[in-house]
Length: 260
Image 1: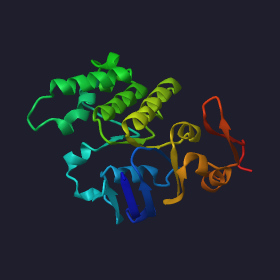
Image 2: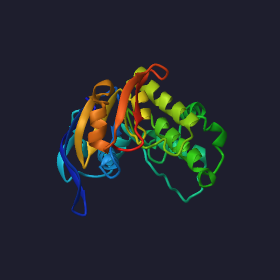
Image 3: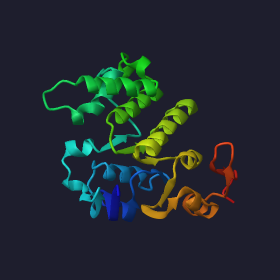
């Protein structure tokens, strides 16, 4: 088991965001988190990453309370690609990716040859190696997002959390990085939990989906079982048809132009 979430609740300034969320997320799957804007998707990822503390309920990771992990130990287990990444200091792209290795570098020690090799390998496979000497402050939004994605992969964790991590990318780079991530799930048993706005991308790459509305889980399970027209109407208030598309080998959704 990767995560066990029990009766989770969270609020911002007494404004409830998540209410009574309970989920079992076994390891080795690609989970897609879907729901309307403001329903609590990003907050759920922040809680799973240990960046926020729940107001009520509990999160267990690999059988232990998430709050019982030291920050450095948790960083060696869970990596997060945030929706937005801002940094004002002119680090190079390669230095940003190397930051993913910090949980494994002893205090006051320099990165090892293995750390440098891991960074090179990840930057090459993500197509960010040509950007290695560029300052992150001078990169485009899409280039910066790819570098941050590479940093998370360099962290080489069991769990990868993606908060709309491909929203700034063109479709080519988006498909490449999602395929790379899905491959790590299949071949290395990684667990990926990703927030998506694009339902068809989620359906193409995720083997399990979690639908959230107003801070509560409405449906979750295998993609083929929960991606249904009636669920989409309940969550988003839209009319849609869901069918298998042989071209992309996945369930896909077609929407009406209006909700009715």
